[in-house]
Image (cartoon, rainbow, N blue to C red; front, side, top):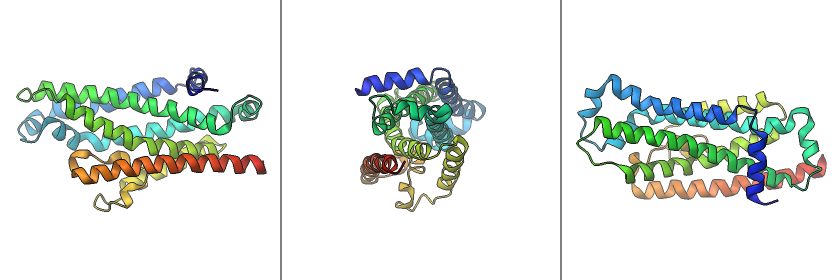
Length: 244
């Protein structure tokens, strides 16, 4: 089965789960953070000399990224809960679809949902930049670079969340583990580069806080983690199938 067919299949299965409304609502909530924060304290932010996007993300990204990561964890749990509910996973095994293909189909849907979140938030940051920082030119390029970086950082989180969800038949088990990992990630010191490579901590990183070589290292690490998590899941699924 092709990737596009797998994605279509996953989209059909999540129609009645509330998955898409949750991501839309979460994206709107996260997008409201910079708008509300700046609206209540416009003189504090407008008086700063840094680029508008850096000001807005510096003041709001930790809260926005927290919402993004929690939604990603919850979304991963929902995507696999529909497989384990009513023994649907066993029924899926009768179809010409490998479990690894099923995993990557869900990963594509979750990453697309994460991209939707970030797109909504990017529009909000763009609007705030134009409205409260009219002295500056429209920061389109900077916003695209920043949110492209954020999407790259979110991919390992999405894959690891899905891997946890695929290993746990009970939705609350995988959700609990994911939430614990998220809050553990918030306690990691930002100065410890190696520790910030923990997949649940990477979405909290901002390109404006790092030099170009550090940003490049984060991009390489995200790509490497994506490959490692994907390959590990394929191996785990094959081993689990043998001993099932």
